[in-house]
Amino acid sequence: MNEPTQIKVWDPMIRLFHWALVASFAAAYLSEDDWMSVHVVAGYTLLGLLLFRVVWGLVGPRHARFSDFVRPPWEVMAYLKDLAAMRARRYIGHNPAGAAMILALLISLLLSSLTGLGAYGAEGAGPFKDWFFDLNAVGKEALEEIHEFFANFTLFLVAVHIGGVMLGSLLHGENLVRAMFTGSKRG
Ligand code: HEM
Image (tube, rainbow, N blue to C red; front, top):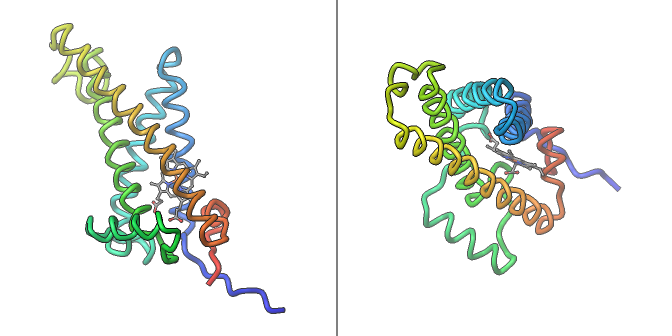
């Protein structure tokens, strides 16, 4: 019997970006309480990765581009309805609900990183120290709370993202996680 054709979907930069993002978020989240130097390096790395992803979403190959996967809300809703009935169609790139989650993850990670830089500035360090060092104790506390909120919200989104990846893999009998390592999917 012939093997089904494999097609390249995720370019090497996207795969590297994805797993570096996972590692940096994990490092930032786990080091938060008592390993500040690691936390700061992981936060800057996250920010760099996010900036790269925005550029790659504009100039990268087909399936990396925002224009390839960002869909209007009604298409996301229609996809979720089909998914609930277990008859959602298969997409080679990101499906509409997966794509909405990707945008949510990128925005939440960006807000986590930027509020982190703000909180770091309030401690008298980093590029925002001149803006935030003079904040009073209540302002500093609020900045830290907001930073923590976005970090925890990102963790919640990650859990839903992993659930969605598992569901999509089951529905179409394919290993989406392996595709994020090899770059290839069944044609
Ligand atoms: C910190 C944790 C994670 C974050 C922030 C994250 C974020 C993302 C982002 C931004 C994308 C879109 C890739 C792109 O086009 O740029 C993506 C896709 C993907 N992620 Fe994650 N991810 C995380 C953890 C995981 C884990 C643990 C797995 C595996 C179990 C996973 C599996 C996948 C897969 C399979 C895709 C491609 C989905 C598709 O086929 O459309 N992710 N993830």
